[in-house]
Length: 131
Image (cartoon, rainbow, N blue to C red; front, side, top):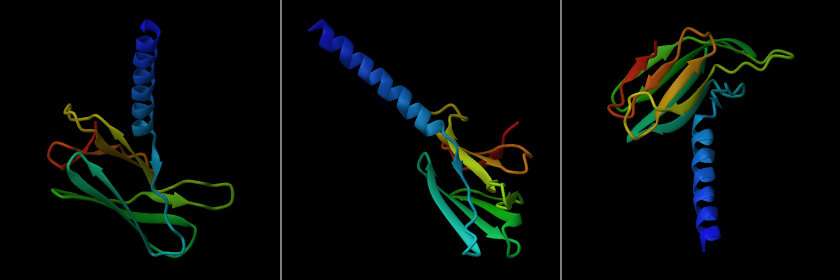
């Protein structure tokens, strides 16, 4: 009986660690070269979040407009992407993190130009630049 209880607690603990690792793993904001616009959807708490990537010109590298849209706010960033030979740089990455100290994970965005991270807060859906 004790063995079964220890196994159950250990299994729950490992599942919680796996969930946190999965949530915090970065996800790429890749530009689709065959399309002029690429769209990604996710959620920050109860707020819908949409990333819209629009290439400035044809080609496998260059600037891209990254629009971050939530139910409550919108931001436009200008990162770079490059898929030249031996390059594999997306326009940025996004991941879940806890920024505003509520129970729901927030969405954080790291553009490729490294000007700073941005967060879409789960509490109110507002977009904030992180310090």
